[in-house]
Image (cartoon, rainbow, N blue to C red):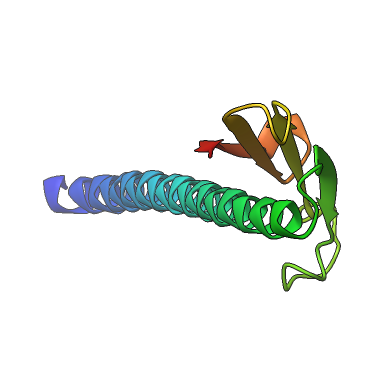
Length: 136
């Protein structure tokens, strides 16, 4: 009789072992998904930071070209469209804003050029880069 009574226990133990194994697999899968999402978010953040750095450099180049053409140039707010950045305008990619300020008078000593680039312009995901240059 003991042989017959041990078989149902083994079947029950097998079911429990399978359930525990499925639970462990589910925990591992959830951890992998969490790591993957975190990696994706970090990559997107790095992309936004790099784009804002490049936009700040472009703003400096733009300002220097405008100052060369017109010494009285005092700055501007440059709205860069998502299409100009090479991406479609979606909720996630809204373009960028580059603010250029030139302080000081053209003939009265050194002037200061300040450039600030925000990509994208909305605060939750915004990356901001700035440049400051003294002009002769």
